[in-house]
Amino acid sequence: MKGTFLGEFEEVVLLSTCVLDKNAYANLVKEEVEKHTERNINLSAIHSSLYRLEKKGFLSSELGEASKKRGGKRKRLFKPTPYGLQAVQQIKEIRESLWNNMPQTLFQNS
Image (cartoon, rainbow, N blue to C red; front, side):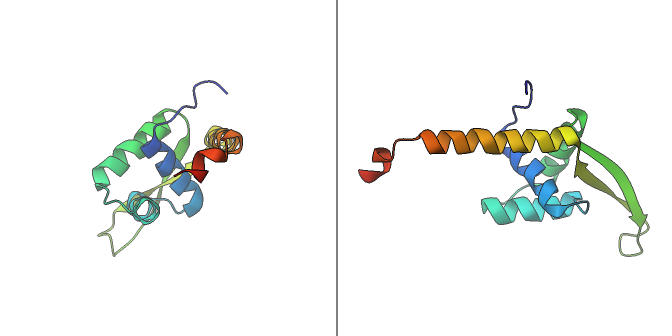
């Protein structure tokens, strides 16, 4: 699959939307990314990445229901597209292939 190369941060954001399964809005994605990376992330970086991934065709979004808790504002919910799911599968296969081909002696002397 050509053109699915993502930066590390985009990859983690895309994977987080997959984990959150149809309930992925920016604040929850931020929490998921922070939990797995153990880094503090700026919410605007999450927003930028989500919209960039949507523009590239890896995510789609729709507005959720309005809530009193949010002052009547609606959340933008993101979900991976079939292309996005294909990309995460390819990323997994590439990483597994590299790990499987790494010489075990590399770790014996460290």
